[in-house]
Length: 446
Ligand code: LLP
Image (tube, rainbow, N blue to C red; front, side):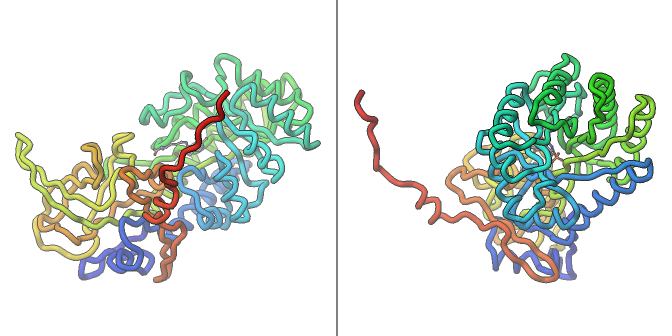
């Protein structure tokens, strides 16, 4: 995770900045991003997959899934590490463009892309537009024809793999909104339609099987099925689809229960499987790409909270200590939404007190507003202490809300003893300014 260490006084320090100084200077709750850690992880992904595919005579590349957390600075660091950006909205495209990302290394996803999203994708000239339905092929063909350009298209397939993860984040089974099914022939029909379209180039086949996945098995099945479809298209049209994209989904360690495989291990396994599948299908080895989000940004960020009320509650089976912090489900909904587990530690001082199991909760008006379900914290934890929750880089700020009109926290990047905002915190002033009051407009009478 983030290169956090505690000094002799038990104070947590990251990127040369201590937790108490960060909280004083920038306030809390606060997302803290360790830049060196992020760079190392992103470069590690690129080099692990690069080396593994080079070893089987192939090539791999990666597109950072911006949905996990995207700011201009993050897009820039990912580009410096050699990754492209996978976007799925106008907002994500605009941030990638502002960061100066090479459009050839930008992809666009989405099951319901707007005209504005398709227009920017074509006008900026991004490298891949991932088609998710048959009607979208016609829309994109028309938009490309109107501009007199050719659009690079990937077809998102549903490969029918059961990803062993929470239902809401598993995406390759049949009955859900994403992708075109391989088993019913929809994926093949879509690929045929793209090949036939005058202004579309079929540049790849895509599969994303889910998120927070620990082993290579599901990816391997998906890879073999995509190789199969690619071979069919070669037989039917005489074309070698240049690229297969296996999506994102690589899991991270939120708690000691989580045991994700290392990038190098995953990469080597996948490279071998793809090489063998292509050999058996009698095809060349395509360029292989990935869209990691969580695995790159998740561990690089922790959330810093200030402890307020500590309360002991009689549960019937004993006493539970509730430690309340100054944020909660508005800055991390993942516990309530996916039953996610986090861990935390005291970040502001040393304590000789016995560790005791406590529940860390937020300040919101819901009993499900839990930050960390069960954690050992020193029994003397109390108001003013700082608590750090690691692994909050992915899908926490993007899923954050203004519930209870609590402003969403900003993100501070730390490196070499310096810290700066890469996303400003919301303010009560801005929230009030966005609320225009009583003024009402009546509809025109018919
Ligand atoms: N590519 C596609 C097409 C995706 O849909 C996703 C994630 C990714 C890549 C990146 O997946 P990752 O490497 O980050 O697992 N909000 C949920 C996760 C939703 C994932 C949506 N798609 C959560 O907080 O767990």
